[in-house]
Length: 366
Image 1 (cartoon, rainbow, N blue to C red):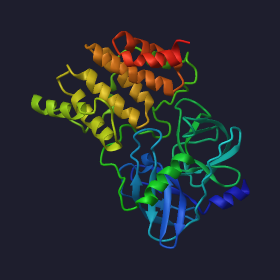
Image 2: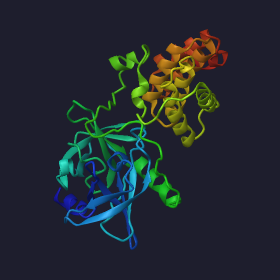
Image 3: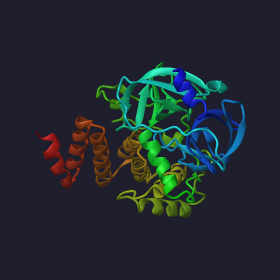
Image 4: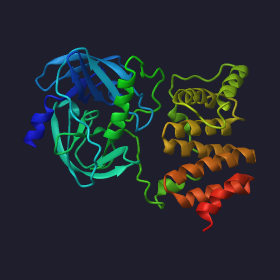
């Protein structure tokens, strides 16, 4: 632990904004360029932030890359100093369950605080590392280290109302994010849209364990309407006229067969929020379907399923319902929930989706 402290004290920083503080760590240190990883929700929309080192010196860093915190997997941001400072930490992509780990950060502004734990589990196809190392507000953006001082992930969120259920974005996604910047450092990735949610440490964000098919919340995903306007930014206003409503609707329904890129997904979500706030509700089933396709493309299956629930409940046409059943079934299949997937595919088949028969035969009728 003492050796780890010596390794990390020149690498881990406190990230300070007008609204609060978080943590970060040096991922690259070169003669005229120091790069620091943190969480997107720490920097929010700031272009510059204050960096405080363990020796109490401070620098002003520029936010050069920001994924926008649209879901739990892309809550990452990259900061830059145009001179060399600190020592870069190496990434490790080996996550043996039970391995000793330490989390380092600035909880409640208490700089360079170390807590110890283990890797409790690896979730979402190696994208999230679950640990029982204590994480609090201010730890966001700090590193989760193994005994060799290598970064396993970026400490990001905890389950509210629990103890020991803490999560870090794994180094697999950190490396991918960093490689995107190195490939094209002049291409800005700073989001122009408001985040859909703010996954602050200890916030109301709920990342439920869905390994158990009998989980109450998971079963409830299959029925009942939800008010999903809480996902929308308050700054997005409703269309001022029916013509404007139709123009927006025409734009997003052009993606009815699928969302092809991230920019289009973000645009769909922004427009759909405006449409859902309007007084014209006859097209809500398709609006929710487009939202589901967009969230699915962005990797947020929970919100995709919630929107599909609403799409199915609002649908008046069988062709709309069967499409939603197929998509929801595919998502459940990806989540290894075969019983739910088969039920949805069967519903789609009963409403005339003949192409789904092959999946029923291959996965369900055995």
